[in-house]
Image (cartoon, rainbow, N blue to C red; front, side, top):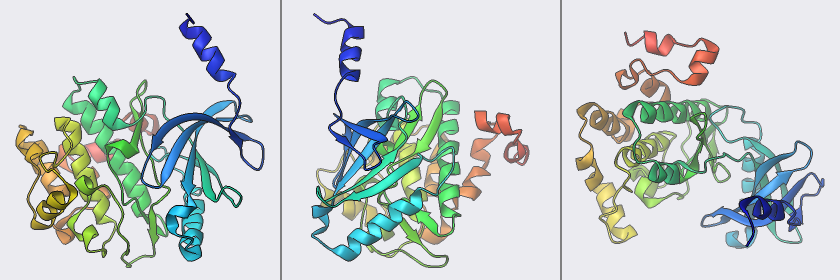
Amino acid sequence: MLSMGSEAENRDREPFVEVDPTGRYGRYGELLGSGAVKKVYRAFDQEEGIEVAWNQVKLRNFSDDETMINRLYSEVRLLGSLKHKNIIALYSVWRDEDRNTLNFITEVCTSGNLKEYRKKHRQVSMTALKKWSRQILKGLDYLHTHDPCVIHRDLNCSNVFINGNVGQVKIGDLGLAATVGKNHSAHSLLGTPEFMAPELYEENYTESIDIYSFGMCLLEMVTRELPYSECENVVKIYKKVISGVRPQAMNKVKDPETKAFIEKCLAQPRARPSAAELLKDPFFHRIIDDDDEENGDDSKVEANR
């Protein structure tokens, strides 16, 4: 029987399944996660000597629509220019004509996604949840004020990642985000039904859909329950969402302040606060992140005193 050390050594000796065109990044066979159109594999950056994530999109999923493929490629490339400590960094992107795939390399977080991390650690204080929430909002504020504006469109706890040893949270899975110019709305349906804002179903929306999704993320963090888990199928979720019926999980939020804050995020589009406005909310009174302390940034906290 192999020891844990031997298993790790054998895994590290595993040959690459695939290597990027530059020869820098090597992909292993181990799958870290998968979605509707994308798979994420464990990979290695030979130049830096660090583990990374190899994201692979099968382009046949886009029915050989070259316009859509080119748009997807250009959007992913744009994401490589995003630099923020609460956004998963994108290092490289290329299209593999032979395999008909779009590939992009991103950083990987040590503790996986927030959904699984929250399930694993049941006893988490509200202070910790607020710290995580602030970091998510800082990431969203950066995306939404970027030029062009970047809308995530599929924000949920599975797409938020954490380095558990330092409590650092990062928004990920930006490969299929939408980019729009200022004062323009986006058009296309994409997302996870439980976290999708009503206007997203109408395919006419702005960056405020990410705020709605963030509200659902916070609800799941607090209750450890997937919103609308009482619904048997997507159609029932859709009917409740467009009718403005809140998920039953809201009844499990006992703290009035937390419940009111979540409701702000789920408000009608025009009444929904921006990420910047939410960061100044009294809900975050006296909450300081580690990066605030590093930068001496206590202005947001002082404003609420």
